[in-house]
Length: 599
Image 1: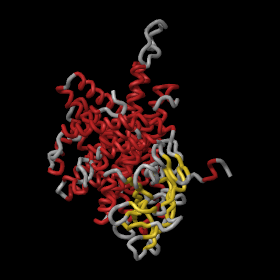
Image 2: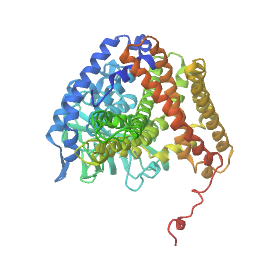
Image 3: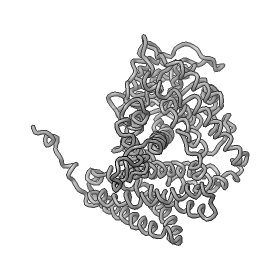
Image 4: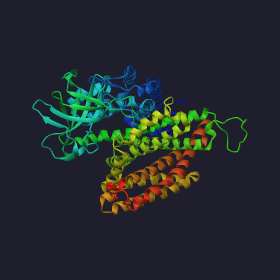
């Protein structure tokens, strides 16, 4: 049993739920078949298990150090990342013209998940480099792409995103980093960036920072933000690495998790001229950066699933082998002890983990399938529809796994009992790693404001209507399957609750009051979406059971049992969550600061 993946579940999602086989018939992807993709996943799994998994605990205990202005990383980091780069894995999702393998995004996230589950800290270096390279490939000019993109895809240079500043936090309108234009083809960058993951290290030859800054004289707020390429070392015209570019490491932040990757405070231009290169048009930087931000939000959600999967697989294995206690009706102290997986409450905790993890993983694959379908569509209206669905699902896909897959990690600790919170077992590390995802790329509260303040309202509510219609399409299909008809009816009722609450909020005039309970709304609509994913999986499992082998029969029956759990134990919670939303309850928004402890 692998501790980083359930390949049967990956295949189920790829081929039975979301029909990757049909996608592979499109000209864009017809160089691949299932055999080729399986071989690539096999190779990636070997590297993840041989190079990433064995050093995860070591890197957690011995994080990179700040030594005389430089980073010192444990030696094992270099070997693991070199193996990843040597396999060409940074380039697998890029178009062939950019030097990539043009794999479907659905396959890319399956590959990336192996490394994220094995060692989430180390995965941060690759994850950010891929995002920065995508941003450069989309909006950089030909000279910029020729100079910076190949060494990033080869893994010789890594990439970052530099948004946050100490005084601004999530309020990007308040960033103070400036970019002064020169007549030499570059801008002088000055300012500081905080919480920059992978912002400095001693692993790659260079680091390509994608930096948000303001050109003096531009419009105030977010409309005045521009995007710049700012390398750690200057890059000569022939692509060779030159002298330092005065990007200074001011210190390392020490987080409760993700300790295998650096997190930094960077100063730009403090010690000399820091050169940055404008990407695209001036004052369009935030629009460009939203591509990487949205990719990162989906990636953070996927990372949350992977940390929870690691906890689920470990606690499941532990529960199968740990002997303790007897059934309540067995009073004989001399009778054989049971594996704890035989106890009802342990089964509950394992089933909850399965429902959270596999439901959220299905959502990540559904989002990936939307991206893949956009790339093969030649119908502009269909492409726009797919984009709207992805837009409204992004805050859910980021935040629901970050909340409930963290809950899965908590349950994994509980399954192990006292061993669970000891550092001799990895489940406490998985929990610490996952707790960061709740905050990464926009907190839970920010995602709630995004979905209720923007996404359900955009295009006159069209994206929300598309989401509802997509869910009801699955409901109608399930309604004709006798074993699933009751779930179809329950989900239909839940959709009506979401629609009613949404109407109540959108009809109100006080925006502060409308958004006062946005986080509750986010959790509730997330539950509805995950129930939808479970109904999709239940439909595929019901079909699979018709001619299943004994082992596949157990797999499919497990899917149906987890669907049953989610509908019986989780989906009913939305009524309580939506009650204050629909009532525009002002308990929290009206609470004055002095009420929390007195004057």
